[in-house]
Image 1 (cartoon, rainbow, N blue to C red):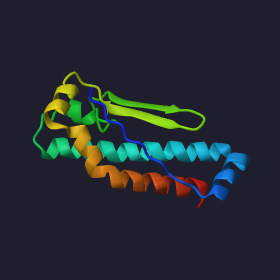
Image 2 (image 1 turned 45 degrees about the horizontal axis):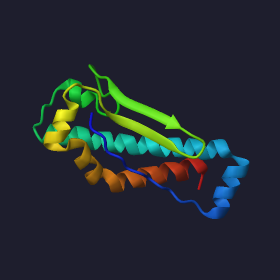
Image 3 (image 1 turned 90 degrees about the vertical axis):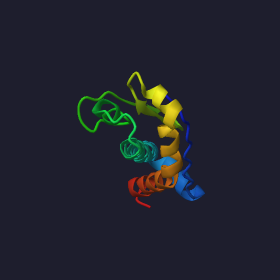
Length: 133
């Protein structure tokens, strides 16, 4: 399994942050979770597209197991961990040859490069929509 780390920071106005921390901390946590999950979907979609378009090993097992299930068979890696001030998502493909494909074609790394701006946009949109900003 290949590993790429991407950190997304969404900055709120200090007054808005104080309000949500004091009045609606669960709403803030929900916004963070939705932002992370939405960014993960964008990344996974891009990795699936790169795999299909690049004529890489395009097995249903591999493509369907990237990030979230898009059919069967599938066993996606999608581990969401929520802390008090941080939410992380471990995502990827759980097939024996995923690491070899990443070493050869850098599918996951390229997906981050191509989709990073969209990931940031969807994350910010999720925060705004969830918090009603």
